[in-house]
Length: 206
Image (cartoon, rainbow, N blue to C red; front, side, top):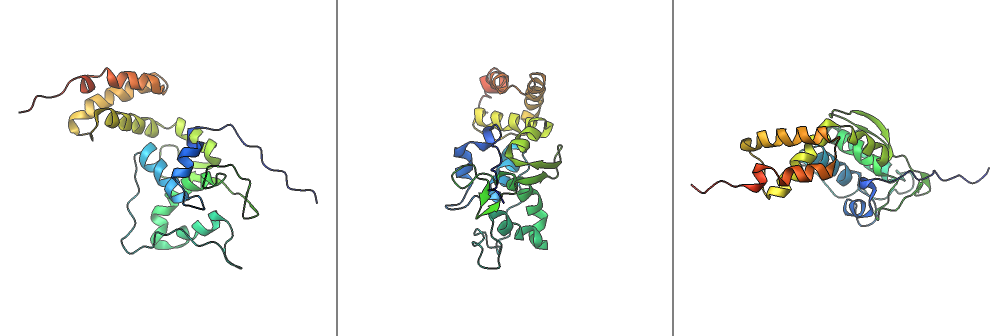
């Protein structure tokens, strides 16, 4: 048989930048959990609940003879346990989409000699469904109203240097409408935020 031909690497997106990928990995292996939690919490504004206090959060050990060999197979044990599956179905469903990228963010077709499986699925979002790889995940998120609204909230909080309250709802609704009208233009969003009344004024101390 001929040598296995590597899969061609697709055009990359922000979520496949080396800095993000290295930050959301362990020292040796990538972390589907860290990568999945980042997307859910930062881009969809649905942070998963923290793990129970008695749960071992150390990364799975590398496979020994007869044990799972790939990073994905080791982490898949999460969803095989009933007490973990409720959270890890959505977390790992996103995080497994990054399996083509190692702990340094380098592209890989093989993991421990086995073909990489980067299929994943979004669950509990407005763009639920299967995808294959981080680029397809990015494309799905780009069409998500939930993700667009979350980005507006995150930029608004960062610009004002504080969290949001009920008093910010009108400002956020206005910014989200402008962001939608601009077809998700981030530069237009930044301009809208810094020219908003919430950014340019502040309440007098009582």
